[in-house]
Length: 436
Image (cartoon, rainbow, N blue to C red):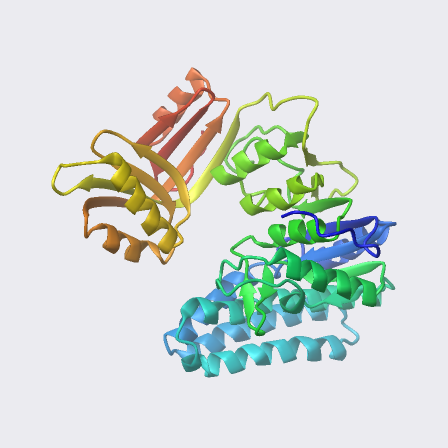
């Protein structure tokens, strides 16, 4: 991702990203407007789908794809009701223009549901429907900013963020996207721009998505392409904590991290930052701030190239919904290198998300995210290997572990696999994460 020349119009630009929890209701949208209004410089505001809209649209997609149009439309009606309730709360005295814009987007989904038989590929179909969540939320946010006298330009990312046709995992064409986004900003000067996270588009006009939680990645890519001053992700937490406060009674705010720290934590499963987010920022040394949405006067955490102090507290990270695969040769003529080659080919072909790999003389164990592609991958591996697998697992990573922590984890969890290095311990355990 090298530099492609400096855009003149985007000088002093910042990027703010607001997740689904931040815009799940009218109060959240009003708070977003207040935060944006306080920023004196130029902004690109990247917004996710509202609340649990992505999950709901996934249910719409599943029902429509299996031919259950009535169930799909019923699920879509719930999506409509939730968004209209937010609009009514925002504007009880009138909102017909906004409602018409939202309804037009919902009718596009209705047409997709009724025309599901034209899409033989699930992933392609998924992207056309699920991307509607961000298109709707940004229409509402843009309208809310306008109504509060915050003039803004609406950026249609399926037309501006160019990707290939790897549906559900769209790979961004940085050069093409740079030309499109910079061209839009130059032709449409504004103090504030509103853009969809998670969503891109192919050269032939089909919408793509960038992977779950891909809105963070969108913000990083946009910052890279516009040479932005910084990126701020607004979250419902004080910043980056050393543990999930829902599972640990005492947590510590990590005020400063390096890009390397952030990549390591994100890969292990930290939910605050998407793993792909860091590279576009590191390439241009753009700082990433994580700040509390409901306490925006607080500084939160910052990720940069260097920090004054290393992380000096243990960090606990849970990665849920794991499948542990263990491979053994059928003929006991095991050659580790050959097995690894074929294993990684299967992983790549089925686009599995690997969380951990551990090998012994006669086995290789791999923990992967439990996606709809896992069964086909297992079936392929079973042609050449004895494959055992366990579902419903979680992966706990402890960075900065101690003997006391190791003993406490063993006492509170059923462990299927343990992996330790100089400073990090990882445990594949049964069930959902529990308090330690």
